[in-house]
Length: 73
Image (cartoon, rainbow, N blue to C red; front, side, top):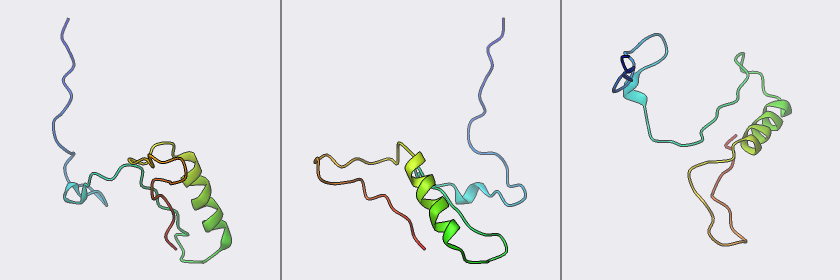
């Protein structure tokens, strides 16, 4: 039986993907209208996305603080 070997590193540059843009950002999301039309639904979708992300890479160790998560409009 042979073991599968996982590739090391990032995939090669292809289409819109460029490995040079890889960062250690945990829990990043992006919501937009591809035609550039502003709407309140985009904000609602961004808030829902933020709620769906349990782990964002940080914690507020005090009971009354958060981890600095939010949205940028």
